[in-house]
Amino acid sequence: MTKEGILMMKRMHPSLVFILAAAICLFFSSCALGIPSREHLSYKEEGLRLIRQMDRMAESKEYTETYGMAEISSLVTEIGDGDYTAPKAIYQAVFSQPLYTIISGGIFQDISPEIGNILEKKFLASIPSMITAQTGTTMVAASSLLSIDEAFEAEGNTETSLLLFAFDNSYGAIVTYYPQENGLILASSYFIQADVFGDTNSASSLETFLEKVLVNKEITITEIPTN
Image (cartoon, rainbow, N blue to C red; front, top):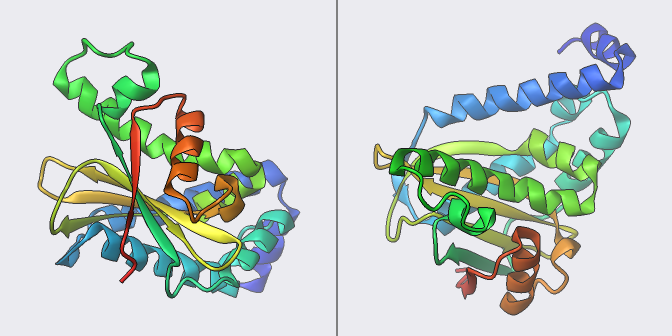
């Protein structure tokens, strides 16, 4: 983007800048959806790959300058300053029932499988926003602008799940995984503020936090090896 274009964005009303930024985010996400990874990856491997891509976006001065809103741009730069090379801990959350049943409190128990699959995807996609919302709207905006969606071929277990990645800095990441009918897994990655969970060295602490956010106790979190 030219300097003239960036200056024009900065003169725009903040709400318009936010809408444009969201559109940019959706553009990159939609591009990723149709390009599955060529190799079979585990959930952990795909998650780390997406986190590194988000980090490169956050480190890009050209990308951050398009935001126009200084508060969001500053937070994205701060996220990009973190080291996401090696996680100190990785946790996997699995659900004992379909998500749409868990989060809705059983309201949708009798719906058709087709509608159930649609709701499952929507509820899974809402979890990262529910988590980042705990730390304010600026974090929600920054996380959304850096998020990536990508379809890939997975090896091993392919259930609906989410992985929480903790690093030795102020930010971590959450990646959701949703099996699609074509055999691919749709992975969606987001940065989160690490201290939102409290003790990121404890699976039970994370489990308690998610149960509180989702208002349900049908969640089991296990720690998986980082190497």
